[in-house]
Amino acid sequence: MASQTPGLGRSLPARITSDLVGRGRTGLETAGAMMVLGVEAITIAIRDILTRRFSWSEFLLQAWFMSRVSVLPTILVAIPFGIIVSIQIGGVAGQIGAESFSGAVNGIGVLRQRAPLVTSIMIAGAVGAAITSDLGARTIREEVDALQVMGINPVQRLVAPRVAAALVVAFFLNIVVAATSIITGYTLNVGGGAVSSGTYIAAFVSFAQPTDLFLASFKALIFGFIATIVACHKGLNASGGPKGVADAVNEAVVISVIALAMVNVALTQAYVMLAPSRIA
Image 1 (cartoon, rainbow, N blue to C red):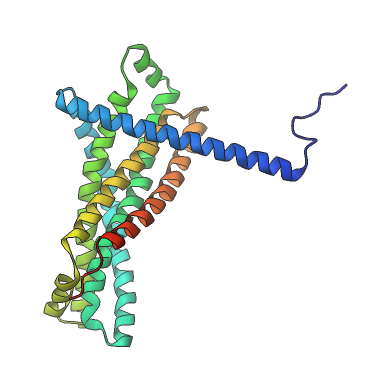
Image 2 (cartoon, rainbow, N blue to C red):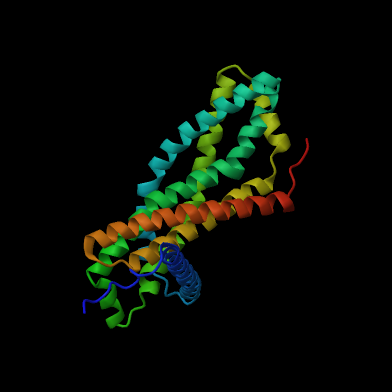
């Protein structure tokens, strides 16, 4: 009797349900593995720094690599992003006679949302993809297995320095994006004659809060950590040769963008509840 293909005799709804359940289980397992990797990487990094065993050479190498692949693209994205938002805000403000508040809207929008958002996209797209491809190539060449055979923890040797470097790079990258976007908005609004320089700056100073900068920096650190952990996990678990590395890079970028969007919503909502906007 000919063997029957498994699942062929089941109904279509049953197969769809089984597939969704399987994907959900796999997603939960992946999320749990990433959380474990993140906790382990942070624990090892702190322990090694305190015991003076941290690989500072690898940290500096990765920090330079991340800066080299992300700074210029980030600036090139931040400038047109700031131009588009400034034009839209300036148009609406002109229609309702609120040009004097354009500085507050632009500045606060940059600090709270635009700078961390652009930073997260660059970290996930440029830095995350580079980390995944690097670790994925090491994995399929069995370099990671060789480290384990020699008694070297891959998390300590490869992941912890990358996580520490990503935190530092993301922090400063957020500052670069914020400065670029704010300068762009100021140039368009003041240079275009829509509002005077003093009015623009006064509106920003009146409504902005120091916690806005703290929120942006905190978001950048969280986004950098999440994107790096996702990239490292996918890279260390790549399989199937070069095609497997390409698939791992694609999965890492998609998962990072989705996770960062969800975390951004949660952090923004929590901030709005804990630190209401100040009225000038």
